[in-house]
Length: 67
Image (cartoon, rainbow, N blue to C red):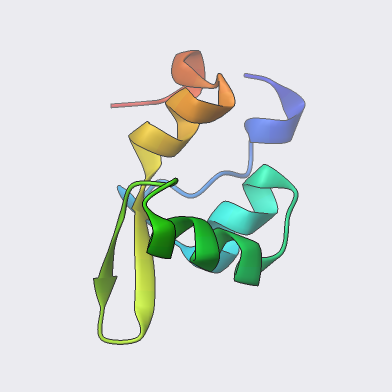
């Protein structure tokens, strides 16, 4: 397992903050990307939820996904 991925969440959905930390950008930027459709996500009340597998694929971490 790569060092930068050893502490990744094991849930299927990530919050905007968790995604932002993985992507190295601000939570607000991730929220904007979700709102514009640049990053596939769903909004539940006021919270954006991002599919972990899709995000990992986008970041090139497909091999780090555990089932």
